[in-house]
Amino acid sequence: MENLEKTFTVSIFIENTIGMLNRITIIFTKRHLNIDSITASETEVKNVHRYTIVLRTTKEQIDKVVGQIEKLIDVLKAFVHEDKDVVHQEIALYKIRTSNLSNADVEQVIRENYAKVLSVDPQFIVIEKTGHKSETQALFDKLKPFGVLEFARSGRVAVTKPMKELSTYLKELELNKQL
Image (cartoon, rainbow, N blue to C red; front, side):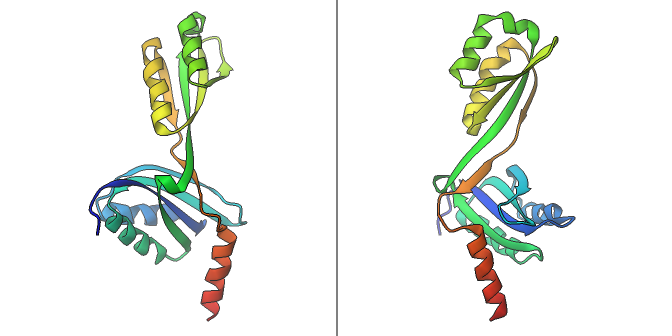
């Protein structure tokens, strides 16, 4: 088994019940795995939600964790993907004093990084950047000299490259239960 740490994206499809996120994160905690980011959202299938969890670990460790997660009641299916197998993005918001907007350098940084101004207030502006973590971090580093008042990043949102749809997995799951 390969013992190198890599970045993995875990997609967990669940019936959205109270306490599910806690039960899932406890499994990571017991194995001393640190979650880099986690997002939760609805899916294309009614009443099914997705947790997207990103972490660095070994293939062996992540396979064990996913095996444990799939044993939980209300977990429909969990998948592990390497970065090459997913299309992913994050959204980041940056709050900067409006007085710095008059600085042409700020405008140039925004333009060069394909970011956009979301809101202009008398005291501050809010800038949005969508991209990979390295891109949102790079913009933060470039805006820092202008005085970033607030910074928030969403965490990874991802879809898989393989074409098998979630509804197909759910039908297969239902068939297996009937056997």
